[in-house]
Amino acid sequence: MADLFTIEDLRLSLPDMTKKPLLGQAPRIDILKGLSFTLPKGEILGIVGGSGSGKSTLGRAMVRLLEPTGGRILFDGQDITHLDEDGLRPLRRRFQMIFQDPMSSLNPRHRVGQIIAAPLSLHGFADVPARVMDALDHVGLSRGFANRYPHELSGGQRQRVGIARAIALRPEFILADEIVSGLDVSSQAQVLNLLEGLVQELGLTLAFISHDLSVIRRLCSRVLVLYQGEIVENAATAEVFDAPKAAYTRELLDAIPLPDPDQVWT
Amino acid sequence: MSFLAIKGLSARLRDTSFPILRDVFLSVEAGEVHGLVGESGAGKSMIGKALLGILPTSIEITHGTIELDGVDLLRLPPAERRRRIGATAALIPQDPLTALNPSRRIGPQITDRLVDILGWARSTAEARARELLDEVHIPDPVRVMRSYPHELSGGMRQRILIASAFAAEPKLIVADEPTTALDVTVQKQILKLIAEMQARHGTALLFVTHDLGVVSKVCQSLSVLYGGMVVERTTVRDFFREPAHSYSRALLAATPKYTDPLASLTPVPETVIAAVQAEVAAHDRSQRNG
Ligand SMILES: Nc1ncnc2c1ncn2[C@@H]1O[C@H](COP(=O)(O)OP(=O)(O)OP(=O)(O)O)[C@@H](O)[C@H]1O
Ligand SMILES: Nc1ncnc2c1ncn2[C@@H]1O[C@H](COP(=O)(O)OP(=O)(O)OP(=O)(O)O)[C@@H](O)[C@H]1O
Ligand SMILES: [Mg+2]
Ligand SMILES: [Mg+2]
Image (cartoon, rainbow over all chains, first blue to last red):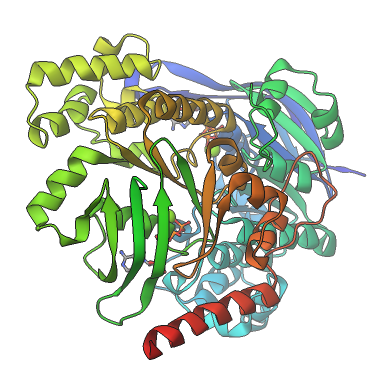
């Protein structure tokens, strides 16, 4: 199948404000150090790696919330590496992001219905109310939820509102950054099953950032392992888990606490 | 006699009387690690807060006893209770970023409690802090004590909170999701460290988490909570081998295992929720009638 993303030698550096001298420019730190990979349409790509390895930075570069300092990002054949806001506007609907903390990304003073409707109106969709209801149906929330406020929802329900808001726009690509980390196992299972269903139903392509490798194994078709801003492993999920090539991947696998009292942790 | 014995503890929201904890019985022996699991909102953190005397003011305890080392905390006058809790119990909090004051150096953040609450001499407290930072494998403790929190990584900050919790040789530590903010390799180091410190100091540990994988690595026994009620109390071995309650089995079925990728992930089914809610309702009725 065709590639939705083609990423070539992606580099990103940021000024290190903690080391900025009183006068003059802050030194730059390299955060992404030349990443190359492709993401075929319809795949679920897992992105794993230690804290600070560059997962969120990579995700934010892919949806162009950050501008790369080197290399190229092709989205559906179009070079989006240095597009300005005007150039990005028509693309903004086509890629969506869902964040870890649903509470801070949902306006507490707006009802769920308004929260899902706002980006639809912004992008000039017709039939906004019908699309809001359709999105709620898709994420398994009854239509009555449209009248609730975020603080009246459980963590799992809030996360589903975030997903509903993203899929209402019928995007082609969704970036999910640690979206199940704060959830209990039951809500987590619901959200994972939901995402899996949506990818098939709506023909989505998904990049899923997580530090939980059991979740990645369950959900993703491919896995990218980052270590200090570089890709150390990029392969089909089964291959990464059954025959990891990088020592760092092995280390990650060994650190997963299995729900099994007989597993010995060395 | 158990080191910590919570008996019939019930708590509710002050303004609406909504039950937060329902007749909780729970005991932890010296040197034991006891897990508290259950879905979000089940009341795990509230149990820890009740025994550390830090419940939100909107919540009141209506019944029960919390015996720490043979003394019922709830019957002590407030000042005496605070002193006793300060001397015998401590907390390892979830989020190392918000738990440390960003504008103060690490050293005093560890030693203040020892000096102010326990009346240690500053120099004794500082020596103790250095010793503990060494125990949690922090290189160059002297330099770290002069550092500010933002100059340290998340894993180092969590180590400092662990050192700080053990500083006054508490007999009981409440660890409330101490590793959820960390990546797996750091989580593993921190869990091993907590186990090592706990064994060395013979501390009883109440370990709050919703990660059953973590429970299986650090706990010997656990209580499963739903709606502020303990639905099952068991050993870790029995919980994973033959969980007695349908809700416990459902939690296990909802937990992904990377070694078993094809197993379907089942959220806790509606029927199981209905059954456990019926138990909670039956409990509430028996309270009213009894
Ligand atoms: N605005 C910024 N200025 C300077 N450094 C930054 C900035 N944002 C991120 N970094 C640094 O870039 C590196 C990668 O950060 P990033 O947030 O992408 O990591 P991550 O893999 O998502 O980590 P985590 O698992 O903790 O979320 C880190 O070392 C971080 O400190
Ligand atoms: N400050 C507060 N005021 C009133 N009610 C509260 C407060 N904090 C928590 N609650 C309520 O008390 C109940 C138990 O909450 P608790 O924080 O103990 O849950 P938990 O099991 O620790 O969940 P989580 O896994 O999400 O941390 C919940 O119904 C919650 O909404
Ligand atoms: Mg991140
Ligand atoms: Mg809690």
